[in-house]
Length: 469
Image 1 (cartoon, rainbow, N blue to C red):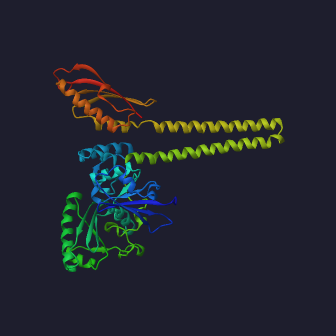
Image 2: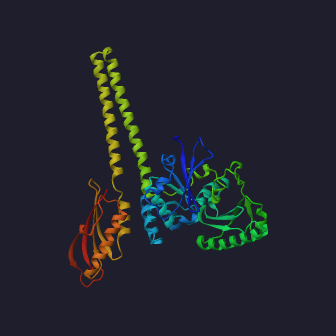
Image 3: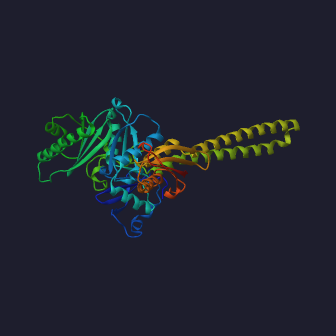
């Protein structure tokens, strides 16, 4: 198996197509097609996956556009730790029925200078995706990166069209039997539509009428979502339909985009790309600048991989320096006088001290990186508290073992309402914080004093100690 091979998995029409792609195979090679089912019998999915695919790490999964949710939120700061907690809370509010959504999201800051302080979040929100992801993970084929045709177009148009990031535009991709519409606001994908065109018996005029009608309907939807209008139209087609004919139907200026000849749209026997991806080469799909979504645990793994690699390189360098020092001393020891040897020894001692200081610095940096982030903890706690539970005091212990102590009050005059509220709180803390053990209601201590007539202070005081990873 070639080490530089990559695996691209494409979900289309209830099938998962597995394609091997690499420097030695730039045109790609289909190594398997697996039906997508809600459930598989034991080892059924794993048995259908070719052994060649199982040897390739970090596969890319391409899903249909409709599995993606798009949200834009006002946001004033650029701090990543605060942004992450903020987005998780907002996504939970926007998609309350999809609990897994806070594990699959990515974001970027708005490209519109007129709306400074906004954040563009894109996430995976369809049960079809979560079900497929879990099955692939159980089969040891976890996709580390997930994208869609719209995100691939977003990157490709950025290369083909000048200053596309500052525009609201629509891309019309016409194929013989269907058409795809992609809408972008300030260069960011908003939504897409697929349109089935009349059969081959219909005239080109009939197909144009259907296409023009559907585009007009979609423009109204865009206006509702983006609160602005489309100001540019781009056209890619593998049919006899011309952009000038569609422009006359819509009364809009439409610009044809010429893609690379290597990626031509003419159907060939060896083509295996599904219709939404027919305008792309495998290098387009696999390009590192294409927007993708990863599970948050995968994001953390990738971030720590760089730190671990730096530590290994540093350790190897220190071993080399110490080995060279030993060799140098042994080789030259016979030709130095005692005074010269003493001077050399002092020099080597100084070098050792410098290395020790470097090691101490590296240890200090490593320890600091392992400390929990107070902003993330605070965001996770805020996300976990029900409306009837108020936090009054939060104490951090950022020395190992890492701990957080929450003191608060359950705002209720009914003792029977305490347990449901605190149960919801500990479930939220377990879900939203990285704990060394799950929080349970038995961890909560009470100060059984009830407030007086002031409703703002009425309720029951409690405290809970959380052990953080």
